[in-house]
Structure formats: structure tokens, C-alpha cells
Image (tube, rainbow, N blue to C red; front, side):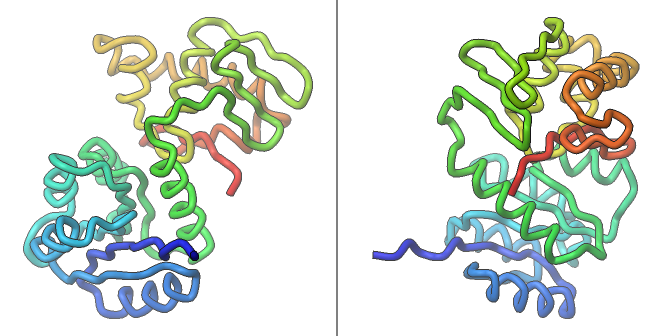
Length: 231
């Protein structure tokens, strides 16, 4: 018996963008449900229980941030924002509202499909503790608190390790500066962004082959960081 195709809900009012995504996503093996307004999107999310939601912020009735917040009141469905709003503050607000990821229009189909695969994989394993995290040559053994690059163990300071495991917990997603600071250094450190710059530099120096061109620890300028996972 074959598994049903993943159901994606697209909440987007732009006709050309819907047409483009309809062709791209159905040809890639997804079932697509479409909504043109935030209100209908909320109704479809409740009725269809999609595996993932693609959400535009500039909807004709409700702002996409409001839609995100309302969905987060009752569902953990992965939400990827696709928006022409490319300002840092827009990205931060969307992620803080509960979005899992953010793509600025125009974007490539390949990147969108990769983000979808990561989000679906994360959702499928949500709540299942992972003893070992692996991407590329980087391995983190959470049970033994050991970190390896290839077969070489790397020793981290307590804060470096806490920052790494926080990124591992949210692997594949953008984590805002505010969220990282709160989880690693506590709620009173939300404006101490210099901590992040210093410790992220140290992680890259220890865990990247070329710290000046990081492959794993990616910067989302002005927003936060993402731990890249192989797709």
C-alpha cells in the first residue's frame, strides 16, 4: 500500500504565484490545496489538516502574521512564509509569531523544495528524541555530549555546546537572535547580541572546514542563524 502524498496548503492571493507553485509542487509529488484569503486559509487549515502551510504575508483580508498566530493557537503544522517583504524586521516578526521558515520572493524552486523537505522531516520526528544528529561531516551525540567532525572529537565549552544543541533542536529552521539568547543565556540576555557573534565565531572556527565560508552555521543577516541540514 502506497503512502498518501503530503498535503500542502498554499495561502496566497497572487494568481501568477499560485500557478507557478501549483505546477512546481504537484510535479514534485505533493497534493496542493489553495486559498486566496487568510480567512479561507484558516478554514482550510482546520478542515484539511495539511502537512505543511505556505503562507504569503500580504493577504487581502488578514495579515499573514495574524494567520500564523491563529494557527499556532491550536496546531504545530510547519509554516513557511513566502513573501515579497524582505526587511529584517518582517522576517523576525514572522518567525517570532510562530513561522518555521521564511523565503523572500522571488525564490528558486529548488530552494523551496529543500526547505519543504526539511520542515516535513522535522515535523515527522517532532517529539522523538534524537540520540545522534548528523549532517555532512558534523555529528553531535546528544546522549554522550560528544561532538565530532569526521572521526575527530571536538571539545566545546559549556556555552558553545549549549548554543550548538539549541541550533540542533531547531535544525533547518531560522532561529532569531532573541530566541537563541533566551535559550542559551536566559531571558535577561535578549539584547546581548555580541554574545552570539563571539560564540558563533568560535563554533565555526572549531566545526567548519572554512570558518570564513561556513557550510553548516549559516547567517540570516539581521535575523538570526540556521543550522543547515543535508537534504
